[in-house]
Amino acid sequence: MKKAIQTYLDSVSNAAITCRGKQLAALLSLSDAHVNTLLEHNAQSANLVETARAKLNYPWDDILLLHVEIVRAQHQGDLQQAYEDQKELVQSFQRAINSYDKWCLPFLYVINKDLRDLAIEADVQQANDKKENKNLEEAANVMSKSFSSCITDRSLDRVKSRKWGTYHISNLLFKTYFKIKSQNLCRNVLKAIRVNDLPPLENYPKADRVTFRYYLGRLYFLEEQYIKAEQELSLAFLECSTRSSRNKQIYLGKLPTRKLLNRYPSISALYSPLVSAIREGNVRAFDVAMESGYAHLIDRGTFLTIEKARSMVIRTLCRRVYSIMNTTRISMETFKQALEFAGLEVDMEEVECMLAVLIFKGYIKGYLSHEKQFVVLSAKDPFPIPSSVVVT
Image 1: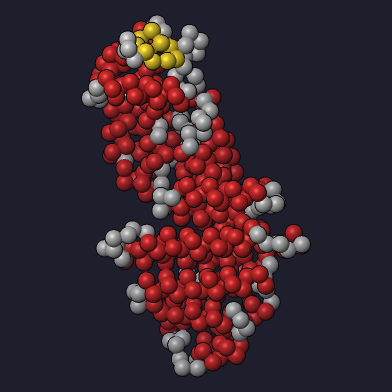
Image 2 (image 1 turned 120 degrees about the vertical axis):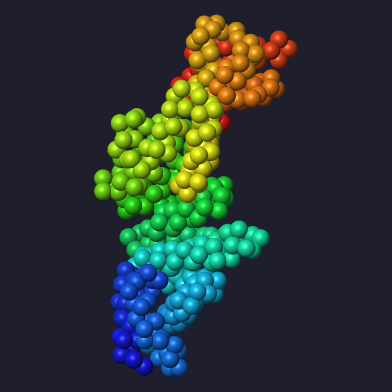
């Protein structure tokens, strides 16, 4: 066996024996420089299996051999096989993880991230298949077992507990659930976090805290719990490193000022038209901006979130009608004319439905008179500040 491969096996063995999780993570990562070494020296020599079995204890022997196969399959472009082998690697470690404590977490993070990445790549390669994200959905189920292995750790030594990996793996799950458009599954993760005895979130690494608050804020926004969404996204924004300008662009969670948008030019062109439309109550301009920015919003994972702001645009338009009419009793026909002036073709049923939704959500205080086709607004604060509205 070539010396470079022998040295690599020795490094893996020493890292496992001495419980050096970060080193082990690098040695078994698909993005580390050692991958080129394995390929250059053809790590599939006949006695590799025998040598690995002799040098490494369970499960590290199985894991290393699988890793070599994954590197080979990925290099040959067989991403489906690489994904299947990575899945087996993760499951192999999951079966043995109760023998290890906190030191193994960096390794756990890497193999789950690699699993997710390979699932995405394999799904892209199999794009002609009928079921989109088939591998990624399966990978999410596998990663959920890694989450369980962290949050259910019963170690009496809290310092060495695998519970310190809970938020890191939960963030990986959130990212995956959002990508496969199964945000509802995030609720299962949050429920598990609430009912388990975990250290305070503030005690976890900043990167885990910031990412967790970001996804929590997005979930609250999707549920139209805007006060909670603003709180979480603001905390994520404030804690985010000043050097992470890209992340700060992602975490903007409320209507930003022009001055703030100008600090992040790459998102200004995308969001400025939407912000202006919301402030002006210009429904048509909002729809046009959503359509033109569709691809970028999908890529950023914010399309569904921003789409919900359409209610705010209609609310602003209704408030303008109220300001002009200066009365609490306004015909639905008047609102219909305003919507048509804004460039929308709507019938009375659609107008009545829009108004009913705004009243139900609490964005307008009042009631509808279907028989007389009028809206009767509250004499006191008929248009509450959106951030004060609690949507149930």
